[in-house]
Amino acid sequence: MSYRIMVLMTLIFCTSCDIVPGLGQSCDADKISIGMDEKQVIATCGKPSRINASNYSQQWIYRANQTYIYLENGKVTSKQWQRFL
Image (cartoon, rainbow, N blue to C red; front, top):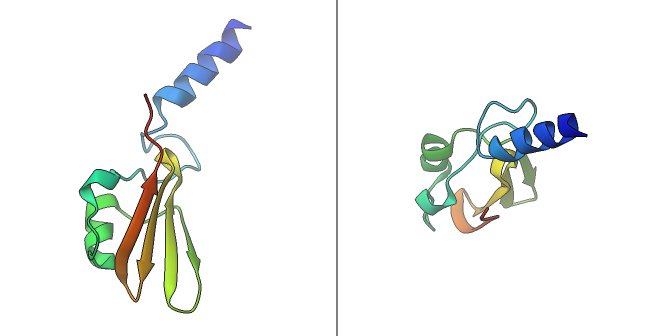
């Protein structure tokens, strides 16, 4: 039982770290501004874990801290993230 708790605590602690395998980069959404271009987002947060794309819009996903950046025509239009207490 204590092993499971320790693993869970480690995962919770490392949620915003880049060291958990498979989670990729984390992104501080407070540093992302509406209107930033793709290069500015990458310079601020690094490459996303995943990109979902349609014709002219993209959803960039930073899985390490559950941050979602939405871009249209290469510019940030909105952002969404999970704040951890």
